[in-house]
Amino acid sequence: MNIHEYQAKDILQRFGVPVPRGEVASTPAEARAAAEKLGGQVVVKAQVHAGGRGKAGGVKLASNPDEAEKYAAGMLGTQLVTHQTGPQGVPVRKVLIAEATDIADELYLSIIVDGDLGVPVVIASTEGGVEIEVVAEKTPEKLFRVAGDPLLGLSPYHARDIAAALKVPASAQRATAALISNLYRVFVENDCSLVEINPLVITKSGDVIALDAKINLEDDALFRHKDLASLHDPEQEDELELRAHEADLAYVKLDGGRVGCMVNGAGLAMATMDITKWAGADPANFLDIGGSADEKRIEEAFKIIVSDKDVEIILVNLFAGIARADVVAQGIVNAAKETDAKLPMVVAMRGTNADEGRRILNESGLDISAAPDLAGAAEVLRDRLAGMKGGSR
Ligand code: GDP
Ligand code: MN
Image (cartoon, rainbow, N blue to C red; front, side):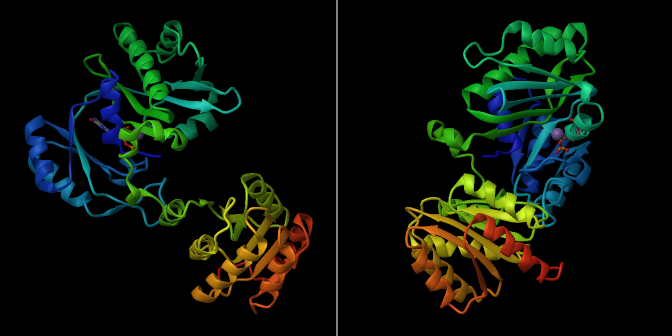
């Protein structure tokens, strides 16, 4: 789960990580009042679940309360489009009014779980304020990594090593090492999957401060952080992913593809994406119905897939067990009729009531090509794609 910058900064502050003073505002008048209270120059920052706001006009320096109000009015109620959002952007409902910082140097600091090592890894770089992906690609030697230990945490000497690698001035070394240790505690104690400070700033007066903050919380651990779960902002999420979440379905949107994939089980989803690639196309999404035995949920699953405008053909790959093939087939037919979806489908069904499932699909009058198994589905999909034009529906 993603949270807003102002929420992330609240957490950082509680753990002793310095952040600029600031207040969140929902109206231009509140923005003005916040700027008056803070005094002097302030930054007006659109609160959205996406980075790249600076370049997209979502971060503005205001010299006085008048300007702060004006910038807030220009952002609130709009959709902000950054390189991390889709073309429709994400709604700006709040702005953070923060005391402006005199920047001497912008650094980068983050913590993620390294899936291979199975431990939290701190990533640091002197190249802050820019897209870290570009640094990783062009100058990977400028990234410094240190693995934490699940039992011992991050040792103080590791924190000092990282501060040294960041080349902060001698007077700020101690504060930076402390900040890194505290950030590691933020990560572990809140069950984060990502904590990212970009930029971490050395101010002209020699202080170190987190100018921006991004925190992702691990969904599977939210049950033990009730207070954090309440920070959820559904408005910032992809509408289809939200609908799937509410129906207890796992839907993942993928960029650039045209095949919608309905499967049961995460492993089968991976295999289905592989055969889609083999057939010469990219998946537009995948939707895992899991062990769902309920026709209504299958209907909702199908509706979500056809609501994805990128989908031109649907690949259903089912290993029926608890999710019975006849129930899935009936759910698909109901939803296809209700939504009047004309999309072609390639369907491979095996397992419980597979014969009955195939009969329901065959008799539905829908444009369905049956396949015997995974390899067969790959071939049928390839043939169907060959018969379709490359464009959109
Ligand atoms: P992002 O673009 O969404 O990552 O938003 P950031 O919070 O990282 O802000 C983008 C950039 O705006 C930063 O890298 C800074 O260069 C600049 N910026 C943000 N806050 C301040 C500030 O208080 N003072 C100054 N001078 N620049 C700022
Ligand atoms: Mn940033």
